[in-house]
Image (cartoon, rainbow, N blue to C red; front, side, top):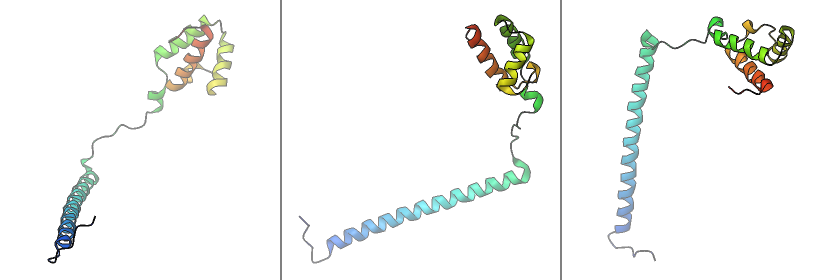
Length: 124
């Protein structure tokens, strides 16, 4: 099923052309990568020279504290569950290691509210 080889080397010429075309495509891709690398390097240089956009820092202790709404909800739901202050303190200590609701982080408060909601049968 192979094509007959022509005396003028037609099949070899076709292979050479496809090899040359592939080489040209690779060269164009390499040049594009070089341009992209130069652009990225230039951007990196600009950023180190102080052209950076401000980034949001990790939340500070006061930003990570529970909200007043969460604190009020914990108190209300714990009353609805019939928990005394001591029982609430014990629950908080078991769940978070913190005995007071005001010492909770936002994520801790969310977990506590989920647990209290389960205890009372209410869903948030």
